[in-house]
Image (cartoon, rainbow, N blue to C red; front, side):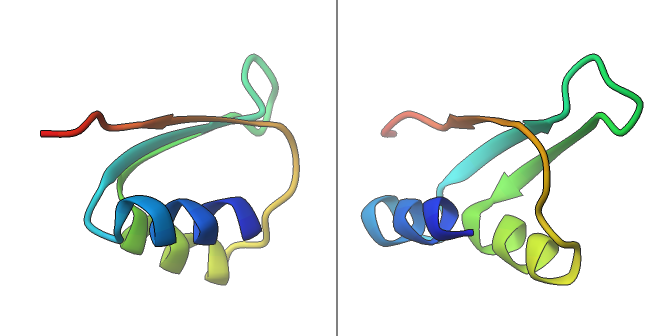
Length: 59
């Protein structure tokens, strides 16, 4: 969560990101959206595991 909050501070909450969690494992999850959406999602769903974060480039 701290990393996502820092990304939102730096890039703004409207920047699109993609997060892949627990790749190649039974609990694999992929989620895409704005940083604001992702922050809300993970506030309601505890964050555990290994993540890969891809941040949209500057427009």
